[in-house]
Image (cartoon, rainbow over all chains, first blue to last red; front, top):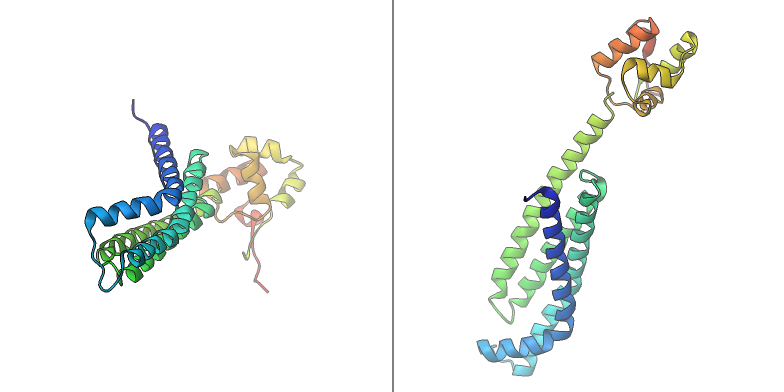
Amino acid sequence: MWNKDKSLLLSRIAVGVFMVIAALWIVAAPTLTKLFLDFSRASMHGMTRQQTLLCFLATQYLSLPVAGVLLWNLHRLLQRIGHGEVFVQNNARALRRISWCCILEAVICVVSCAYYIPFFFVAIAAGFVGLIVRVIKNVFAEAIALKDENDFTI
Amino acid sequence: MPIIVNLDVMMARRKISAGELAERVGITPANLSILKNNKARAVRFSTLEALCRELSCQPADLLEYREEE
């Protein structure tokens, strides 16, 4: 029977999988980018293949630490929820960091539009997710205040 | 907070321990401690009623308004 513990476990496994992918990406990024350039034949205006490759790698290696921070915060958030600590300040802080990571990722993608326009769509998606997480963080902050009020009502 | 809970004074007058009062009122000793140490944000009427009943006092004996400096 599906229950909240299994759902939480699934989320934690998914975060773990993404952590592994991010770790592997550090090593595999140059090869995968070369494959992508060969496959997509992405033409860069006035740039050699080597320059294009370097630009793509710069975007990815700038994004990876941001993704790492985001995934670590997600991991810690799920860990605390697993321990029954849901409406606590640390979770609101984690959500705020996640939101800023998404927005930072959007900025990186906007800058990357200078050499590859489709990054614009990634930027929009990242910015939108950042906005949603920020709203959730605001809801969490209010819920924490309500919980505090309730806990100290005797 | 300018509202002071004088629970410890009344408990001393009635010579009742925190554990016993908590049990009679029906709240946990931890919650009674929150109330006694002025950490509470609000008091339910039902709790106040039980406290007044067990301590044979009026709400005014337990609560006091003191202006903040």
